[in-house]
Image 1: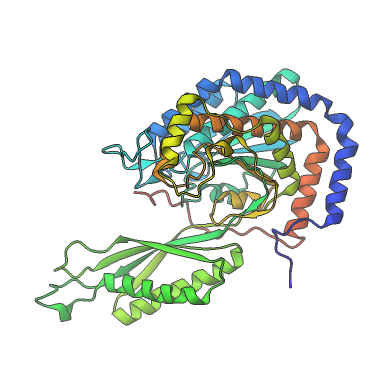
Image 2: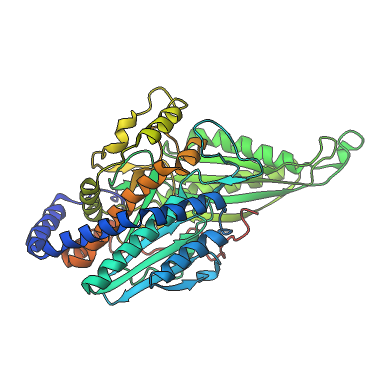
Length: 486
């Protein structure tokens, strides 16, 4: 039986990596000055980057429609001296900002899309904003602004210290189901990168190496025949019947899939009136599993269920793949460096006003939620499996990648919740963002000043992927689904 790509490194390789770090210890003295510099820079400019994050929170633009959010980050990077290439790979909101030249090439990821169908005001009780159709329930306003802050701080240090190398910030749209990074990876935009850093908002501070679920999604569109539901039912063929029959069969299928599998759907169109047999209906499916190969197999079974449903209901079905993403490939070497820097930075502390806000939010969460004090703690470093998906997985499949999460939300808060939107719109969110920005920046300093760290991370990447691995996108050759949120 083959070893999964996300298994931990063999102990021998770990020892070799630790030995390489010890040999390089003497060369790391300048790192401390660099880390102090980026931390001071971020403290001095924290208010500016917080305003950027909150402006993107206000905009709440969904996938591939983040025009103002993307432009705001690009403008900041241009003002800081980055060369910015906008609209890459046919995505108007995607961009690459670069500073410096030569090796190493270090990438930082930035996201900025909001989620549709949820919004919340900056208050600790449920209070939607009337007329607003989306919200940053996954905190990508903080992700984009925090990564941009880290990149600008590192650029300032690189320039002042005359350290060589290339720094790139990737503005990546539509992480929430649109898979923007997949198209950037497929186009080769990461081919010359030595290492990539990222982060994500959350309810705790953790830099552990983590895997995720590979994911493939599609919209299944059924076509039938309209007729009067009472006057001429025999003449109709309900497209909604096709959707419901498909859902029934997929739900029966759940008993016969690997237990780590997740399958979920939403009916996006089901008709307009009960007395009109719908001639069109649509259902949007996600299929997830830790292994991309298993996702491919399960997805084909879902397609077969759709075809069977169409046959049984006298309808016709077609489907459009919307996104397909790999699971995260962890890199323990980079994660250890990230963890050390996170512990140096420390967790999130609350002012008296923030604590009152957090306590009110905490009262709306499950009784077994972690205490508020846990926001200041750093979680134990250990291998973890996340029951979620991200297109960062495709990036990690082609280049050594590591990330972290910080407490931008009240401990116990779930992603995609109104509580996440609320806290992310306050200083609780931006304080956690600064912790992330400092950790990213310090880890970038490590990579620019310690060649042994870069080499060890790349050695681990090759060990995990194996000699025969070739990246193949799960979306095939389809173009980015620019209208998937319209």
